[in-house]
Every structure is written in structure tokens, then in C-alpha cells.
Image 1 (spheres, rainbow, N blue to C red):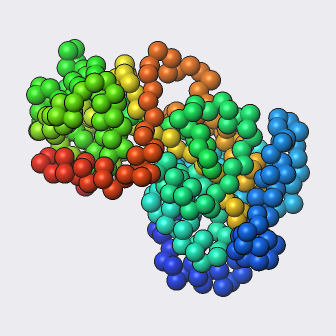
Image 2 (image 1 turned 90 degrees about the vertical axis):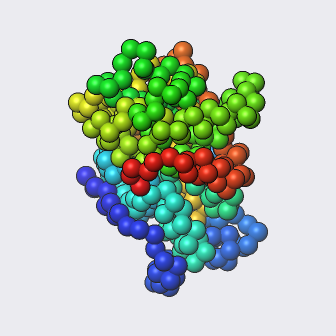
Amino acid sequence: MRKPRTVARTALAAGTVLVLAACGGNPTSSTSGDDGGSESGPTAAEELYEELAGLSGQERRDRLVELAAEENGLNLYTSMTSDVADAVTEAFSDAFDIDVSVYRAGSETVLQRILQEQDAGFAGNDVVETNATELLALQQEGVMAPCIDQERVDLVPEAGQFDDWTATRFNLFSPSWNTNIISGDMVPTSWEDLADPKYDGQLSMELGDYDWYLTLYGYWQEQGKSDEEINQLFADMVDGAKLVKGHTVQAELMSAGEFGVTASNYTYIVQRAKADGAPVEVEPLVDPVIARPNGGSCMKTAENPATAMLFMDWMLTEGQDVIVEEQLTPAIDESGSLEGVSVIPVDTEALLNESDKWSAEYDELLSGGEVIAD
């Protein structure tokens, strides 16, 4: 079977992308005037997405497999961790004998590369799979197109359905703790608990989690708390907190006993650490759990549009099983693992329209904390 080719690089400079474009990359873009149509018309990829939109189930799968066999593999840009990216692409490649070329980097770098290539007229990727913030930015740019079987999209919670992309998985924010340090009535049972002075010197907050911050802020407002009360709760959390950049690093430091409680780590990272023998726990989950969607879509300029559709359909069918095997939270939760727990989505509208405001407020909030890893 063909295997994925994983390429891990930093963002390309615009000049490099221009060189790539000059070397023969000719995207089927709406501005190309070639096989992509006129400036006002759909691209060749969009025409295929529209043509096959009415198919579903096995008929759709069979047609996509037939068309994908005539294409040249799949170019995927993703911010999945390397182990998850390998598991996903190897399973897809094994299922369909399709060669997958992977560019894996941080979500911001993936976004930068796509925008640079689009500006240069170079069709680098067929599919993107990354974080909500970056997908919303790409949606604003109008470079993606809906391409997933609507029957599968309808099974995704509303919090994971967007105009141009669909969630494939969720990152869940919840407090976690080191079981060697925290037990009994020290285990947090609410978000408000994190403001208790008993956690001074034991609580860690992540330097970039302003999406968690803005969502929890809005939730507390809906619960009737005043801005003054909410600001005081967050200020009390920061008082004595240890600040860390990166959720994986945060889990490692908590496992090592550098602090006892993490305010907002991703549940899957803690559960993986626990499975590897670390003395950490995240359950029972604090109610409500805050969910940030991660997802994907096909590009309007995809050079392999049928393969792109096949991959995205697969991601919301068999690919969901791979997501579960990697201890992530699937977009389509058929196990009922979150029954009994309220799940609120990250406020994607605020992320899209007010990210600078909330990022600045969160930075200001944390300015008084002790940074121990950045």
C-alpha cells in the first residue's frame, strides 16, 4: 500500500511560494481564466463538489473512489499532532491505496502558508484540517468550499457546522489535576472553584487560551454574573498562578508535580498522559465543558477534488474511529461519552470578529502571573 509522505516545515516565505507557482503549479482558481473558469465563475473543483452534492451513502462513496483513481493522490495541510496525522493518513491510505502528501505545522503556520500560496496563484493543498480560528480566517478569505456528504454533516453538533467547513473533532477544555497532590475536597468541581485561594501556587493557566477565557466569560454573563464579579474571579485565578505556554508542556509539568491543577488543558492530552502512567486526572469533568471545534474542508483550488471529497467524507465516517483510537473527541459522538455533561462551544463569532480585543484582555489579565515555561 502507498504510505503518506509527511513534511514538517515552517511557513514558506512568499518568495518561495512564487517560485513554486512559476514551476508549474496552476490552480483551478476562479481568477485563473484557464480550466477554472472566469473571475465570476466557479472553479473546476467547485463544479465537481456541486455535481456530486446530491449523492450520498454507498453510491457517493463508489463514485468518489472511481474519480479519485484518476487523480494524483491527496495534498493535505494540517495542524494535527504528528502521531494523529500519521494515524489518520495511514488509515486513509490503506483504505483506498491513495498516496497522501502531508504538510504538518502549527495552525498559524498552516494558515500563513495557504494564504501565501493563494496570493501567489499556487494550488498547494487539496484539503485543510486545522483549528477553528484559522478555519474561520480562511472562510473569510473565501478559499474553501463545502464538500462533505450532508448526511454526515447533519450528525455533527451545531457547534461544529459552519458555512465552508465542518468539525472533525473537538478539543475539550476542563480542569485537570495531579492525583498525588490534589485529592478530596481539593478536586475542582466548578469553574468558580479555580478562584479559591487554596489553589494559590498550585494552579496553572495557559498563556494562549483566550478562546477559553472569552467563552467562559460569556457563559458567566449568561448565568447572571456581573462584569465586576467575572473579572474578580479571573483575577483571583491569576493570583498565585503559574503560567505555561503549550498544553502538552503544561500536562508534562503537572505530571512532574510542578503544580497541582491546570485550569484549561485539553482533556485528550491529560487522558493520554494518564494512559501512559502519569498521576493525572480530568474526570469527573467540570460542568460545563468548553468545546473548541477543529475541522476541515476542501479547497476551491483543489487539483484533486474527488480525492479531497473522499477524504473529508471518510473523516466523518471511518475516520471518526481513528480519532477515538487516538483518544481525541470525535465530532460525531456515537458512544455517548459526554452524556450528562453540558457542552458549550467556543464563541466562534467573538473569535472571528473580536479576537484582538479578547487576546489583549487575556494578556493583560495574565500580566501579573508567574511565567514558568514559554
